[in-house]
Figure 1: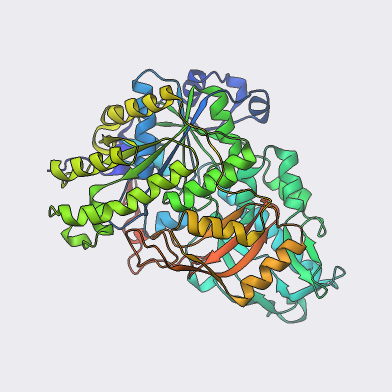
Figure 2: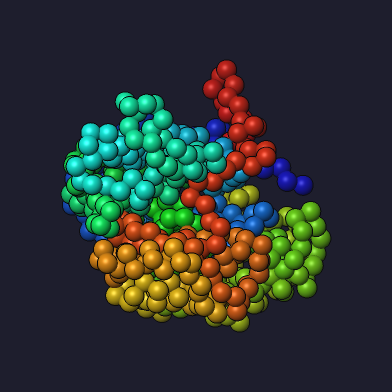
Length: 557
């Protein structure tokens, strides 16, 4: 019987170390941290600038997520706790949670059980204000754009071709497509508008890819907000917005330091989604981790088809990073769901369904290996697993040339991840990795999309809508043809169809649109029906969340 308390109960019962003590463990002096209360801090720009990366980088990714649960974030945190227990100097580098999923379908995103980063409630809510700063900077550009239109539109922006949206960190489907400027003559010109969720904002991507404040401002200046009737791009620099936007982000660019439940250091910074954005924490935090620890453990959003591919092809390319190992997280339950079992039947042993579902895990393992990175599979244990099911998965992994281990970090914390930790250390000791990106960024946009679609997703080819064809030509005319591609598609399938579980192959990926993200330094390709503004479910997590008079919280999982 499961007797583990809820995540929030565990987090609120934890005895936390003062943040200065956590900082001292990794060699940061009191003058190098900027405390936000007693248990979290930002790390000064000077402390970041004077250190150089020297440690070894390990990525944690996973299979395509299912309602059965995989526990990728939990394994990432638990593995860092395990490596610390094994005597290694390790730093955890993960993303900040978005309020959209916190109050939507997912609940909190700081790990789970006895493998969490804390203070969990603060990390899941307003934290150090980074998301609010990104929201403000993004919407300042929107306000300055509409103000420019109101005062005569000297730059000649075509109001039918404005591409810069507004943003909010909440799942709100009503904002996907709206009309602004209905306040009469003083309300500005009426035009169509849309919102994206903050993790999908280009400002978020820029913050996570910028090397320092100067680079941040240069990237912001390059943001394309729309075009003129002659198709000339107009930028944030043209609107003279970059300086003020950078000012709003001057603290947000600094990495955040917190701790795991076992007191180990954790850098939680940046939060782009893995399905509509590049899905990785900031380069600044990762490089800082590499300068402070022997092993830096980071995570990429959703399955390896999205998060890992973009980690390798975008983040590592821009950051000059060379990962030496990757952990792919799976569960017996999720693999059985990929094999056709309904959620309500997952507790029933079913080796045939598990064998079918293993195709999904195999696809992700072999994809990561294509980047020259050795793989360790973490089989996250559930109480309903049978020994036969677990052994089937572990045996299959060996056949694919991957190491594998059971993980029990949710119930046992770092102790439950020591077997996995030893496998990761064995891979690092072997030094067999030779990281390389999937494609040459100098290739034409279509060739890069097709390299991802056929090489990672298993598609037979790509179909482009007329709008996508036109957008690709325009991006290349703007000088963005030789940048990486950020794919936006469903996280639930290798394909662009969320209902196709397992390992679909031979289909044609449907690219409906492509748009520039010039400040971030890539182009975004929208596949299938992916949305940049999620909606709430019929029963959102927010309905179960309460705060009691004594300040304790209920329902934040």
